[in-house]
Length: 80
Image 1: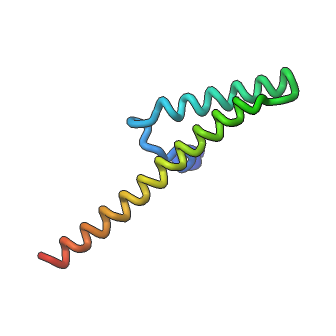
Image 2 (image 1 turned 180 degrees about the vertical axis):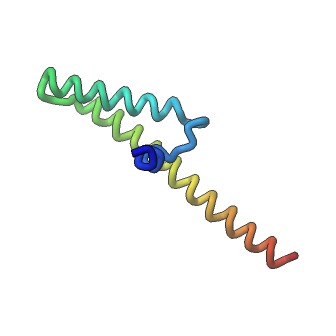
């Protein structure tokens, strides 16, 4: 279970913990509104989709950064 949560929230929480907290609060709020009214407003959907895209974008940039760092480290090994 711990490994699942770690892979699910793999974003570096030191930099974007506010983003993760806002996403979780928005999802809980969305569920409460859905249970109460039976519908979710389009504005709330847009906010949650934007937060999901932000988290996914940060993960994508981190993956791209790791690939570049690995390729730079490999080039330095061949130069030495």
